[in-house]
Length: 190
Image (cartoon, rainbow, N blue to C red):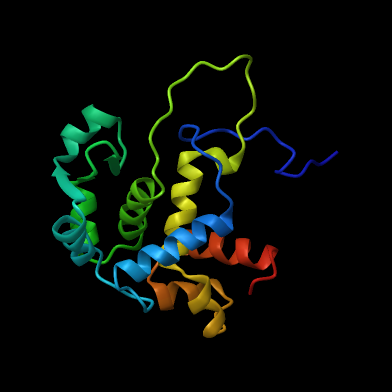
């Protein structure tokens, strides 16, 4: 007997946060793009980091890859909402400078944690309960990055409905484009 992935227990990747629906995250991402003056499909992530630092008190710090490995166990980037700081490995920062699609997604994912107001909630709960996808900080940040980098409005207005089309227009990786097309097709949005 096959079960759908929705009926299986969700494996929390991050930490529990206030639940947010896709449409809510989309609205936040669209608003963020508007505030940052990003209207088209492409932008410079390095310039964006500098603008965030100068105009919005969001700092970024480049950390040696070996230091990051010891500090956070092999992640490419991290953020500290309390200090409004995004940490990037030197490798990720260099890839970002070369236009690497994964590095771009990584930076916007970390920005998503900040903009969505993710702060780890440490508390005791009575009894264990299953986490839902929309309560996972990592799922929400991934969704934010998808909405920010591949806005539905641009996809619809340009009739982009293929993985290759998404990759070419938005400069994202094939896996990110595949997830976006699959999600939007499932909801009949493209």
